[in-house]
Amino acid sequence: MRRRKPAEKVRRKEAATVREKVAKMLEIPEEVVSDRPKITTVGRKEVFVENYRGIIEFTNEIVRINSNYGIITITGKNMKIREITNEDIIITGDIDNIDYVV
Image 1 (cartoon, rainbow, N blue to C red):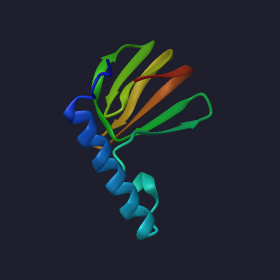
Image 2 (image 1 turned 30 degrees about the horizontal axis):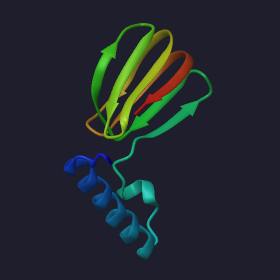
Image 3 (image 1 turned 135 degrees about the vertical axis):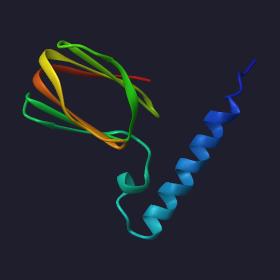
């Protein structure tokens, strides 16, 4: 027997598809209209996360961030939040690893 996807996931996928099509038609970069997280690293000292939903855990050695597509875990040493807004967050420190859990 085949399991059905929850209605929320189907609607989210349909909405994402419509946004992607509109972005393509208007020649707008997809990440501008997408709610997917965008992660930029600068060496091993800084991580910039856009489109996040909230902070789940924060210590000197681990930062767990919630997004619309899963949890982003950043591990390292001496980690600090340099800047935080409603749309993005900048983590600094000695970054060892970035994991994505869907």
